[in-house]
Length: 111
Image 1 (cartoon, rainbow, N blue to C red):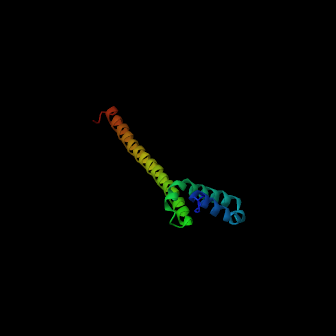
Image 2 (image 1 turned 90 degrees about the vertical axis):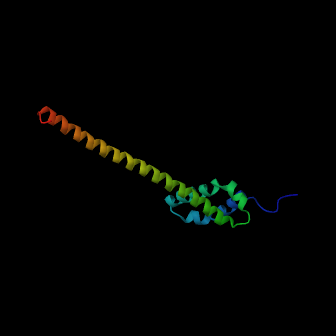
Image 3 (image 1 turned 60 degrees about the horizontal axis):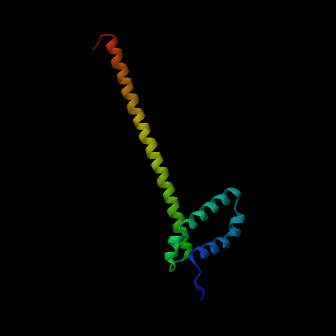
């Protein structure tokens, strides 16, 4: 006996194929972004298989949102890391200036 319900993965590919006219109408740069989004939708096909009772398009969009949120989190982590490094540089810079000032005062006999 064959399956009567297509797998989520096959259904996803079918939906993506239905959107190909839309994709072709996009500018080249937008097509690249569209392809990236469809890739993101495919990344969670295994999890989508467990949601056969839901609309597959909704599951695809949730997969895309999940991947985009991970990218946002990664960008925030990088920004936070860069901000922390900048703060460290400021503090080291201030300490270096203080050290230079103290050394200058020692050289003049003011301490």
